[in-house]
Length: 321
Ligand SMILES: Nc1ncnc2c1ncn2[C@@H]1O[C@H](COP(=O)(O)OP(=O)(O)OP(=O)(O)O)[C@@H](O)[C@H]1O
Image 1 (cartoon, rainbow, N blue to C red):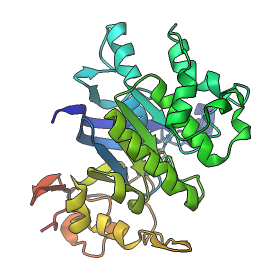
Image 2: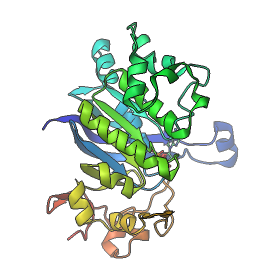
Image 3: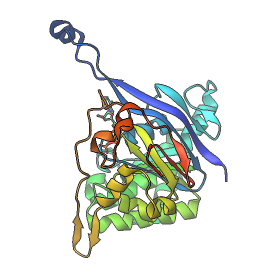
């Protein structure tokens, strides 16, 4: 298998300083927030790579850098060998961009309310001067909606149906890859499984690659081939999904598993991971997880663990054995 996406040493810093005048009056320094720090990973073609972690761990920021919506502060994202940030050939950039689409958590916010669904779905093609020729109707059928609904507006659909429309629009430019940012977390529990099943079917049918972003391990369990676990912007564990589910090696991954929602016939009981997520502007020294870690030793607060291989898993923990 070949890597479709190669991410190396990827970092993204945001300037979250107060306005200059306030800083001068209050004698405050600049505040820099490191959302993503030195992340390296590869995504094989036709596989599902899941990025998991609590809110604020940097999942969406990585997703946006992969599709080219945000430039990296450091490091690179290569799509099929092309680095979007340093490539100068506009044609190559355009081709690489159209190969990757993104769908977001809130299907309503990402659909123009004044456009008919047909125009929304056809837009990626018509905006490039292409002819749609019944494309929207075909895609609506493919995502389990009625082709005749192409003349309707987004508000005439339910949340699950709107996410299907977003998926149809993402498919319009025949991408090789879709970055899916929490695509089902805004949907009713009963609808989530239907949309996930549809996404699985489409992945197989079109040979798609997914970067699937989720805080919910149960969602990821059924879809992912490989999983990366993020904590405060850093990758702390990465393994094939089966291996990770069988033997989670990082204490943070183990905590996420312990807190994973338990499915029952009536809904879900969600118990959040213990302890507070530290302030990303001034993260803890050493291993950023050490203040919440049940097995931390002195060394963990002094020395940041490098990513290393332990029985086929990549893990950043001094105590992974
Ligand atoms: N444009 C921005 N300006 C300033 N800070 C940002 C910006 N975008 C993200 N951040 C910060 O970067 C960190 C990572 O955010 P990100 O949205 O990538 O996390 P996430 O894991 O996707 O979480 P969530 O599930 O809540 O979206 C957070 O602390 C967030 O507040």
